[in-house]
Length: 144
Image (cartoon, rainbow, N blue to C red; front, side, top):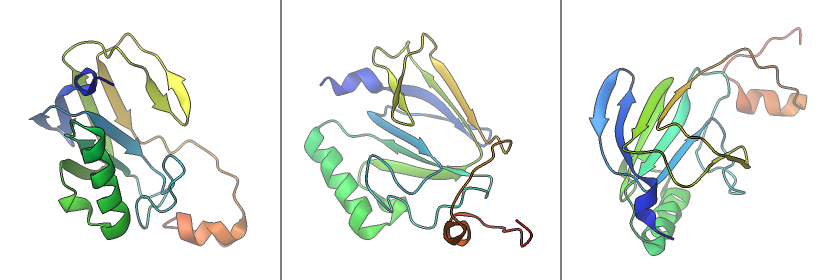
């Protein structure tokens, strides 16, 4: 795998522009990522934020080491080779159209765009077992 094919050039976090090269990017609002439970601790689905992990890793051993560190320490601000944000608005602009597709909810996503914008959309209804509600949501409604 050629890691240089996944480079972000400019990204904007809550209105502030940064520049960086990243080989691996996770944008999520879940605590289960790629079959790993509790990837992030204490994720809430209705807190108006999603989690973003931008990694500057150039080899598979570096990726495995950083993900192992995350899994065992959960110190999101000090993951070797990575930057972590909790935010409600993110724009990523690549220097060219990515040659590989993205994975969205386990599905392949091909695009001819080089700019991607992520925001929170609260217009989604979710059906869950009652015992999961307190764990996954900030606010609960007693009458539901």
